[in-house]
Image 1 (cartoon, rainbow over the protein chains, first blue to last red):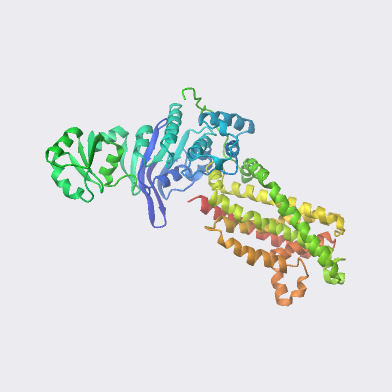
Image 2 (cartoon, chains in turn brown, blue):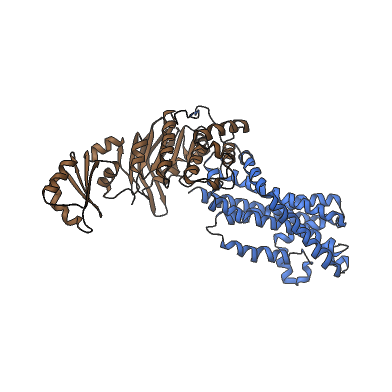
Length: 304
Length: 277
């Protein structure tokens, strides 16, 4: 569906994307994970054919965005980071005008609207003005809108950023159903749980480069231990205490507010820490996540 | 939750539009729906305001003005002189209103253009559709204005008056494309008040709408003659009064057409830079 080789994007002297290779196969959910400013959105904009690549090769559905942008855009769905809805039109009108942009006959658009409203649970809000919708409803409407042309590829730029947990779960559920229908999903996120929930494959981006790629679980196995013990001590004590516990784990990560001890048996590590007479203010043992992978690879957290 | 019907994603969409006109047609429904929610307000500003102007300036103030028709470009009364000028000025003010803040809204506040451009529609399709809507506004506003004026007996030539309606479209386009271009590339709206105060208002006052520009003195008159509004006012006036000067008429049309074309070229460049980064 998508193939990129040495893809680059510069804005003046600033290089947002510095040569990335990506292959996205049909039917997979593919994620771009990375902190703000990693180059995810610039990559998405190139894939959506609204931003010409500065260098490298890019093919979407086998077509060249530089010369066949409109043809590609006719066949993909885009859910942008900012909802670009017309807030003065109602829900139904927003879907209707958007369907018409694709040259779909009026009758076809009307039929699809009912189906789409049902899918995103907005049937009762069909006549409501967009300004009156909650953030989660607006995002669902934007997703419904991106499906009006029945896209082969759906591109979602941070689909759940800024939404409450319940709203996020509804969106994840809907995206998962679309994936089961065979829609190829491409999404960016800086939430590791979102990437773990939805993505079959992902790349981790940082400073315009891909720093890791693979299935979420494989990445965790490859770059992190099975479990992590998190220890919180008093403010400012973490640096000094790191040396006292570093032999207890495979690896120790010092964050401003806590120590992360990577090991296959977190409980055992915790016990050993206590046996040394150290008393953390708070502690917990958890599975490794993509956040740990990212921390390992870049030395920074995803929300930086 | 278990009974959700997942939309069928198997049917293909139509190909991308082949021409900007084809693309603009796909935007027709957007503009119709958008107009449906604003037309009431636009009726007040577009139809009632000019009526009040014609009453105050043309009839009541004009009642004090008596002048030789030869000094009023052949108009038999001040009302007959000022009427075509007001029609042309109305075409211009409608354009100023339609392509400043509304265009900024489409690129900056609501970002509707970005949603249009995420589909097969291109920059030219978007501009053609928006300008077509602006031209619709100019046409309806001026046509109604002319219909309101007709009973005052200020139009000498029926054919000339009909052609004058089309001239308002050309005049409107000559203003619309460059101002549109200016507006669609702006980062903030503060320069709009500048072009209203330093552009629209002086043009309205000094482009031959209310008095012959020969009253301005030779230097100011020469400046007034190169303004697009005077070109439109003069052309409209010679048409409705049935006193068409062929070579001047051709010059006016050519001037306005060139301005519209340059503005179009600039608008495509500016909006492309805004939407395609």
